[in-house]
Image 1 (cartoon, rainbow, N blue to C red):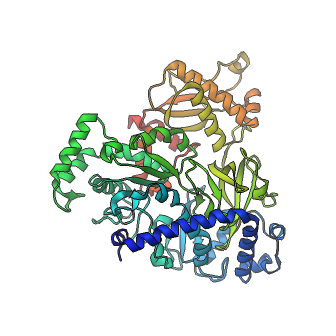
Image 2 (spheres, one colour):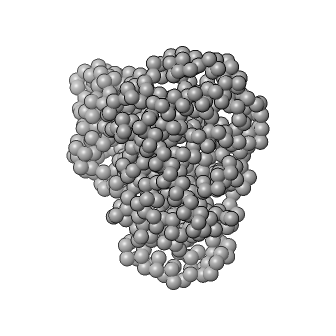
Image 3 (cartoon, rainbow, N blue to C red):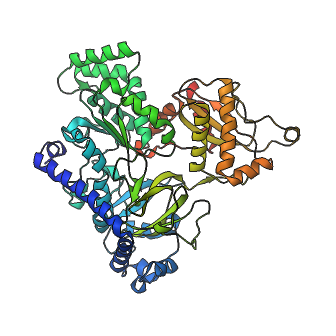
Length: 580
């Protein structure tokens, strides 16, 4: 049965719905015995992998408790586990796991190199699939019509490959969205919503790295369907849809009228729909997804990080009544939280998937960091995430920071706040989450809105925006001293900001950064850090930059919003976007 047939087979749909709700119910029930599940997960990963080279070296066979495990295994990141993983990827057996990885998920590391994340059958069965199915429950429960037809969902992340790249041992090295879980792991119900649409497997040849052309072809086909939901996971992909519709509009309408796809014959000409699309554009002046798909009901993507600043208005591009549901708090390496209801940003800890540990995000992680259990976390605080699971990642610092929102059944609900990397030019030690909260406070205090934002530590003369001002005029002492490094914020306003508004925003941002970070506050007081400045870019500057980056051959799922852009070439490219 192909994907399109699977999504019209009523018995298969019934079983899919049942599986989704069963996994959600199991995860909900597990919250009542979270401590017991943590011990069972630990016992299973130790017993199953005790005979591996890693397990023998770290004494898995004699470990019984989490305290024992913490003493035996240091907190570690990919740079430490990477050599072990490379040995397994080259074909060596019994390195990290007793069962051989069937696939290696790809994930961009901090250096830009692609990690190899081992994915074993046991990991998929015990860690991945339970949260993977449960994640769809809020969508399917509250918007059941998304399963009524194969073409009701535009799944932007689904990108199957006929000839995937492989490791030295011949295992696929691909993104999670590029793996056929049914074929690779025998999971017959695993195809997610939207994978049976006419555009899921493109009917014309496209080079594997021609990602913009793939996106065009999917939109070209989707404008002839009644799309009810868009799945992006990465919100930058969803933000690109209105921009791309307008960018490619003439080509889309012509191909609909001519019955072509990428210039090749495809189906019957549809002059009626083409004329309707032309009337829509003429009536509104520009094209919005809400005009093309008036029955849109839901978007599914990450809702925190920088996206929290622009998603409320972006949602309106798809329709006034559209709901945004949060994708799981998860990485290629494994899950942390999954929304079991319609909470807008947070997910309950997936206690059946991994042994989760945490550390205060204000501290740097070290091999001997004293970690916290979920029962020790406090609402409103930020934490590093460390997890261990049967798939061969042990006390693994995934690099994410989460914020505890509240508790359900005594177990924290967490939302993603950003990566654990810091910007630290003068002792300010700023993290993504701190700057995003400060930006939100400055926006709230001024009533301003933006489409996106990034920042850069300026060590020389700042770029000029004559309509914007720094947070405060320089004092006499500051004016006579050598210029200190200072943060430069590039903003794409949703509507034009006046000079007074820009000045007020920058002043409030400076104050909010001081509240968020004691290091920033001290560095400003000691004049080691100058006042921030503001650059106003064209409204579509970040979208243009995103489009150009994808055009270099990077998968859209991996081109994410980036707050800190210290690379001078990237910063210059962003600032020059509107002039290119």
